[in-house]
Amino acid sequence: METAGYTALSRQSGLMREMQVIANNIANANTTGYRQEGVIFSEYVSEGDGLPGVAMAAGRVGTTSFAQGGLEMTGGLYDLAIEGEGFFLVEAPEGQRLTRAGAFSPSAEGTLVTPDGYPVLDEGGAPIFVPPQAIDLAVARDGTLSSEGRAIGQVGIVRPIDPLMVTREGSQLFRSDAGFEPVESPRVMQGFVEESNVNPILQVARMVEVQRAYELGQSFMEREDDRIRTAMKTFIK
Image (cartoon, rainbow, N blue to C red; front, side, top):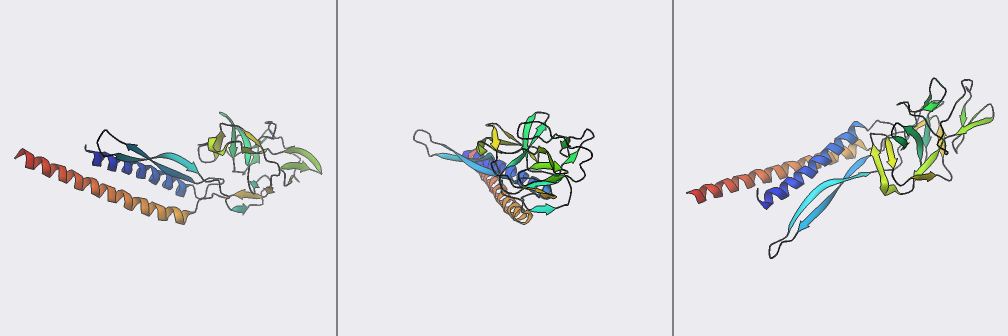
């Protein structure tokens, strides 16, 4: 394959990766706490001795939008949403993780858990226990849980120390390799959950653009193949 073919193929691979990301965004447009993904294209430039430079594109760098999603009122006693910065701290099998999905519920043991059964933690990393008789559970703006006027715990609201060191795990969990710290003035809302921050209309529009760009690249590769075949036939004669 000639240089033109390699260049076009690298572009096609990046566009395919972006199409997969867009499709995943659209599929999770209604997933509570989902953060929209994106792709950054990088360029590799090679300069040979006395030869023209060759540039190839690669869509390998993933990005995540942490823009605020809409808040949906559910009225659920254990449904929580964060307004502004911060994440809920939960205990996943692989360790402590961050999430914006606050559709919680008490487990059979009385521990506050996520829909996947992961315990919700306080700032100290301990599970939060909700007494069975706490039918009047109230959650303050700072995440403090109380029943009958007495505090029973506080939901841990933290933020990554280095946002660039945050890695997505699944659709709703994030790992902070650089650690995290408490949010000084969190704003927690009871009876709400945060919706996905995906704009489906913009994502569909971008999907059309990527599809057209991919088709254009495919057409170029077909014409380049025809040109090489024609040249080979001419030289053979």
